[in-house]
Length: 398
Image (cartoon, rainbow, N blue to C red; front, side, top):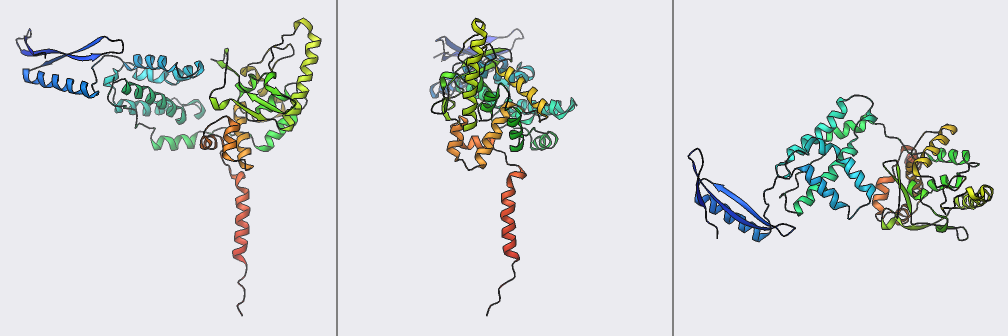
């Protein structure tokens, strides 16, 4: 076993130093830790501590890696498990972390660093002025924290740090209340607005694809729909392919976001008939265009058969909303309106989640079903009956 060596510094001070074998890294390279103390006894004690922790599997070897360097490694590791678009979303979410905390050594990062970062992130958005909608939402800050916690949790597993210093950090309650009070969140369409939109697009060429959005499909699922996945005889629609956008510039075609996202839905009568008509229209367009037509097999295409991407479908929908004088909402928000309508109609939670392409019914209701005052009219009517019963004069007892 290594013993301390006596060394004399240039100042004349005597210290003791030894090398401790701390095991091997993931590449099989030996890890050696240099221990320098004022006495030989202190050197031995530190050596024994290191060897004990190594045997127990709890040893954290000192290193100089910064948080930014570790985040780069973590993002590369995550590529095994998530889609390219998700990795891009992670990197965007962590931009502020890179800028403000990235220079700090991973092993020197503290809970105070993370808490001050979160408080400053919220406060800076408020100091910038402008409309509340231009600031970082509390939900966005919480999303940043989720990614940071995940990266640090992985660092704990890899024994780069002993604890996840972001585990208990949250935006303050005061900031949450301020955000809720100041920020006007766009609401999904009401039933009346949905019906106005449907009536207004009844003669539109893209009537059928827009109706699919009003079935609760994600925009990427609508644009990824292929005719071979639509059974116009049985009236079913299989969702097995998506076409999404990377950076709002490049189309990425892939399978569904999750295994539960791959599903078969029965077509309501309106979308079923609209798809029949759209199929016939495309056949006529193909015959008229001749060789100029590109037969790609997608449902959502232009007059020459070229597939539309999610950006083009979204912009088309926005123009249609403006033409009809409707509030402009995201096509994705139509998903909220649909799932809420199904929930209020009494569709069982398990069916609601399956329709949405989720595995967790409680997540579907928590995320997509927000109850407004108008939705509770039935409860008010029930109370009217209850109060009326209470106001009846007591019966005379004979």
